[in-house]
Image 1 (cartoon, one colour):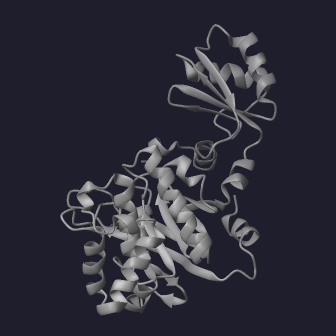
Image 2 (image 1 turned 120 degrees about the vertical axis):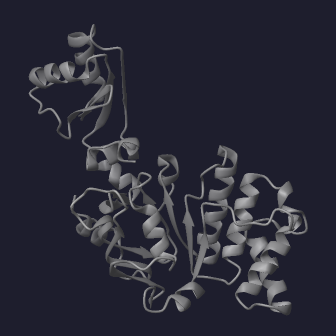
Length: 337
């Protein structure tokens, strides 16, 4: 897929850019004892994309695929080897201090003091930005109101659920009223109810306050909720579009066949239906076979009639983002990690 073309098609000409990443490349020094001939290890390779103002934009990829490096660079915590990042028109490499004024950051690891109240956590955070007095009081009250925690402002954070603590983290990040909210794997460790709660508040920030949200994730069900999605694997951008448009690139239904001898069965299927093994329409993944077909139920009936004895289990469904990832990269998310 031509990601440059996709981005052009899905980014309105009149849209204001909240963030732009251009030709971003980063190499980590080779670890002691590594025998690879290269002098360093590539983490990002010529990565480019834009994020529109007022959208929830997701970076989907496996652990170790480059998401954390990208997050650190955008958050001005790491200087890239090459390329540029601009946030609200400001260069993150040349003027990181100014970029931080426009950027709120929520890290994957918790940063709250559990022995303080929600209000006290925000007040101490505000001091780091030089915010004091009535201005700070007004801002912390407004930030907690944005995430629906006004009635718990004076409760100790240690009494909060995981979802509520994440909302306090977001309130902290929004205290200095940034235009862009950057979140690293915000759903990690949250139960389904807390995830729904988190997404409700992210959508409120987008819809009611015009905040642009950029998040990294490896969870397919969370990536599906983003307005647009960039799939990153091995440091490269492999696809960029809305979740539904990405899934539409798969030709019809996806059939999953579980068998004890996938390599042998895939050869038989290829011969019977004139397919090419290890192609988009037919491939082996670990202990199962994936088949893409315009009419999944009809194909399942034929496969069952021909190879019923070899098949342990067979399912058919509409394409998922996991299927898109396999289609684009040839790996599952777990394989690529």
